[in-house]
Length: 273
Length: 216
Image (cartoon, rainbow over all chains, first blue to last red):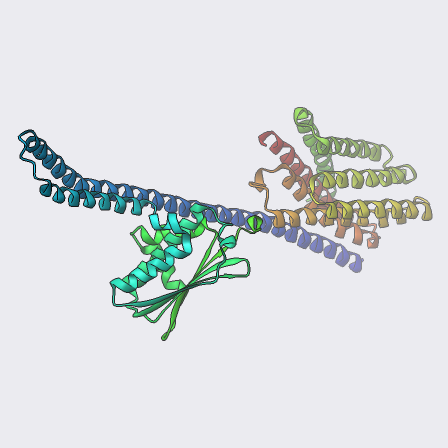
């Protein structure tokens, strides 16, 4: 009888324990699943916010560029054109009186040259003419040479990329690469205090690798991420946006003797000949 | 407290609670899919079995085969609901294989033990363990896939919770029950009360699931 009583108690206790365990399983599934969904939602929200920020940066960059073009036209070209118009009127009056001296027109020719130069400069801001004419490699090489001539910095450029590999990229993609490289170099000259730099462009493992090595103050990936997040300027944000567009990867390596920045852009393998 | 009286009261309540999901199913006939048709067949079979069981309460020669066939129907219909619910051929195959093994082994034990209580002692815990496993598979899939946006509002979550709690608890209950050979009515009533409470919870959870279909 006592055995039977013990057995029934054991049955009830084990069934209750099982029931409690099941309730815990159900609660765990519900709570964990909700947490997972919330986490997913917050990740999606963060991604959306980043996208919006990048979009804003690119719109702002575009607006700034338009503003710069407008200012250039208004402040540089417009006054020269006004002067030119005034001079032409003067020449017309003089010509009517047969007092026109051809020598006085040399100055106007000079002014016209200034206008042409100004318009060329505006066009260069939109799409560098050198880039349009000679392509990515020559433009980068030319930029490195120009920097050498202007500043107290020595630099070199090396490339083993063949034109077929570059042809896998559209003109816009190549322009993006050019702008990214220029932004990297501009930041380098502004902040690193380097005296020597080298730019190499190689084709490695189905990728185009741009490497900038220098002897100035380097920066790590973590520091760069922090700068980009806290930066109010457009440069770093537009750099990031262009890197995303290129599906590229950028790596900053900091070292006492020689630091480097490596941009790896995957080749469009489906377009490879 | 008179346990016999309590057990009797609960048995009426448990029988009555069977009609709750049935009524909700009938009211929800517009949302009927294959799973709900299977559930309707299962609940109808449950009610019929209960009525027949009450009719043949003192005649185990008639009631045992009925309970036996009911267990086969119950496992088949619930397995069918899981097959329809769980994605992935691997899991569907596991459920089909489990069901096939259960049906074959139940028929063999039924014939071997000549439809006695011994056969029932084997088939019920096996059936309950099987459905308990299917319920765990469903939760595992929910965990892995994370494709149900609001689990609480999903009807099959409630069905699965009903299956998990009822069959998981009763698996242990029916596994140990054959060892109880007492004639003491109070002891039997304690077990009866427990089983009936679980049945009532089961029917309520199924009803919540059916009620949630309206909100889907």
